[in-house]
Length: 157
Image (cartoon, rainbow, N blue to C red):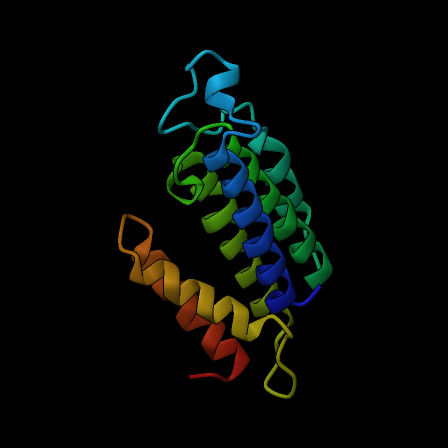
């Protein structure tokens, strides 16, 4: 699945999920008697991020990375439906699906790119690392360094 198609699919799915939550259909808060947490969290929402981390660790190809990305997007939707207002800001989700996936994609790109042929994930890896590096936080410098390594390996610098 292409990145654009994946993002379009995610946007549509998230919009539908949020629409259901706003209109009260499937409202977790009402079903749990108002017990849903505002900040949520991977463990509070019942989401098993260790399985996602294992999938990330095992990824070796673009298809593997795309599959994990899809699982991460499904997890974000599940977390939102369970009451997590911003899954991307949840520390466990961010460590696994944002930073962990970015590190793994970068490692694959760096290992497989040569001066004659760049990996098909070069641009997406570089863009993701640039975004994460620009967000600040304790991982920003690491993401910027990884971006420089990806850009060098891919001939983008």
